[in-house]
Image (cartoon, rainbow, N blue to C red):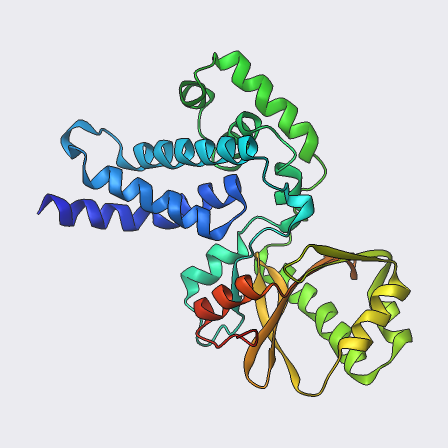
Length: 298
């Protein structure tokens, strides 16, 4: 009976725990591993000794994520600017989509913020994510880091200065996504028509496209270069499906019914300022499985 009760309580916290881990790690697979680790630890614990299961689980996930970050730094893995963070993707169909899943993705952290967060030390990232994004008190974070509260506040303050200026516009997730979708749809309509002038009109002059094909990232800069690339890859057999990618308007592209790539867009003041194109075979295979599709990469 206690295991069933613990399982129910854990499921109530799962979305929150994944949010903490994903913002810490920038990887859906690693975040899922951290959440699963928390469940294993909870299932082996004496629940009678835990005053607040939600807080206890948050602490466990945070510590597991911190250890994974420190291990990543020790192994010298590539920082996020040299690889695109794993995206959270769901086909954007409000008629069939789970409302809770849509809400989670609409609240998801952006690729841009993940890149900034990856420039922080593991301790700075933990302090900022837990306090500024999840309102965990500094005293609790200090215990996780084995630091004083004042030292932890300084960590968060340094991190906050790095990410300042990336606040939301306050328009709300659904309204923001709708506005983004109009721009993204206009971009693909122009690409399909081969209309370079319309394409360039949808892009910020300094737009940047990062394409991850699995062997490193190729970067295109400037509206003319990005527009030319879009026209070159437009193909009648490649079908774009509206998707939420990290909570923002994006697309899943299928080729003969199989997932070929995923694209995430950053839209500011009605112009596309940044595009991330995911086409690495292993990543597309995982995303295809998550979306119930076949992968075009075999």
